[in-house]
Length: 256
Image (cartoon, rainbow, N blue to C red; front, side, top):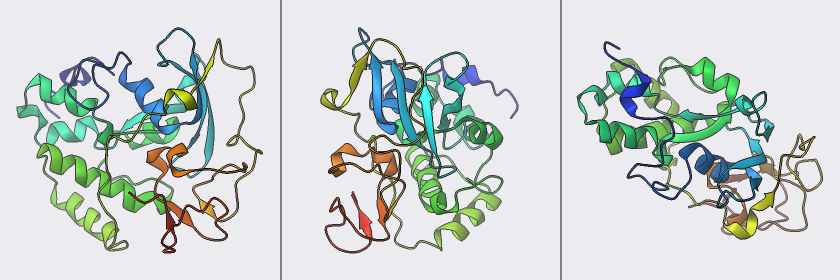
């Protein structure tokens, strides 16, 4: 970690980067919130950028989290660098240009909206030292780390490589994630003046999860794959499939 500082990876959440969503007039944090939250509400007059409220199905805990923008509430949903910047520094990034480091720090492939407490507990850990408490997400989490390290030419320690191998042996059909994922189109982003006083604590639609799907999907009249954040996909179909997401009947819906 000699010489490491967060500033070595550029200004936090800078829109001035060459990765997907870069130079779109919206900072990276709000880009990822718009991508990963269900039913995001954005502030009027911000070019559909600043997210006020939404619901995150947190991949690290498997639990829904209500997001409400504010000094005392925003911390509950944080944007995690899946390959931590400190880990990247130790495995190759200290030799990079400042531009390449800033691109890694703002690359949607390396970013997930997650539970704030779990993000803080992870620190700069790699797969050998930290995995999400939600074991059902381990394969997708580690596959994303592999994809990031392959894209940027970062190496793995022997312990990290062995931990990665053990996880992926559990899921031989796991594929690398496709990024950047789509932002919610404007037609599906509601514009509000300010956050409501009491945002929902569970996904909107009925306040409960539709049985038969993992992660939790709301109970609504109908739901299409393009209405579901890409970071939730694929959807595990464990029972009835009222939204007809599993077209090929293999138990997974909304596959890339």
